[in-house]
Amino acid sequence: MVKSDPATDKGEQTRRQIFNSALQLFRERGFDPTTMQEIAKHAMVVKSAAYYYFPSKEAIVQAYYETVQSEQERLCEEVFAETGHLKTRLAIALHSKLDLAKDDRNLLGVVFRYTGEPKHPLSCLGQGTAEIRRRSTQVFRNAIAEEKLPNDLKELLPVALWALQMGLLVMFLYDSSENQRRTRHMADGALDLTLKLLGLAKLAVLKPIRSKVLLLLRQADLLPGE
Image (cartoon, rainbow, N blue to C red; front, side, top):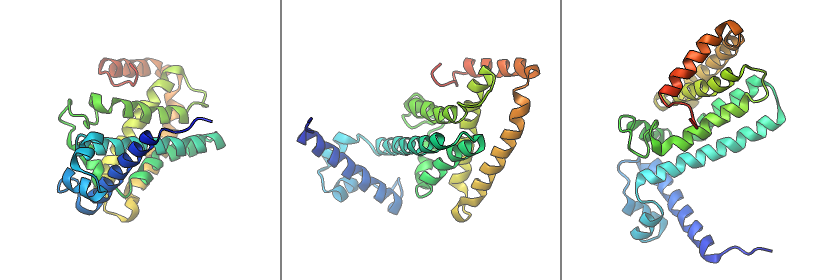
C-alpha cells in the first residue's frame, strides 16, 4: 500500500485553504477590492505562503477556471456515458458551465477584462488560457463523437459550439434576470437552431464552404491543437 507524503498532503491542504478563502472574499467583496494580504489573513497563513501557492490574484482566478473546467468534464462524462441523444449531450455541455459559474459571475468578468491584452495569462484568447480552450472544445467534441458526420464538420462543429458558449458566458455576465433565465433561454434556442442547421451543414454540396471555414480558422490559429 502506497502511503501519501504528509508534507505533500499539508501543502495541498494549505493551497486549498488559500484558494477557498480567496473565492469567499471575492464573492463577498469583489475581485478588485480584495488583496492578497486579506486572503492570507482569512486563510490563516502568512502572506508569503499565499504568494508561494498563488503569485497573484489572477493566478487564483486561473485556478478557479481550471476547477470549473474539470468539474464540467466530470459532469458531462457522466451524462455522455448514459445517453447517445445528441440534444441531451449538447444541452449538458452548454448548461453545465453556466450552472457551475452561476454564483461567480463577477469572476467571469475578470477573464473578459483582459481580452485586449493577448500576453496576459487570463486573456480569453491568449496563450495562458490555451489549454482551457482546448479542454472546453474537447467537451463538445466528445458530445458529438457518436454522430455520423463528415470529418471536416466534426472538426468545425466543436469550435463553433465553443464560440457559442463564450458568447453565452458574456450574456450570462450581464444577465440580471432570475437564475439568468434569459441566457438559458438563449442557450436552448441556439441549440435548437444548431440541430436544425446541422442537417443542412453536413450535405456534400456544402463541403467546399466547410473546407473554406476550416482553412480560415487554421490560418487564424483558432483550432485547438493546431
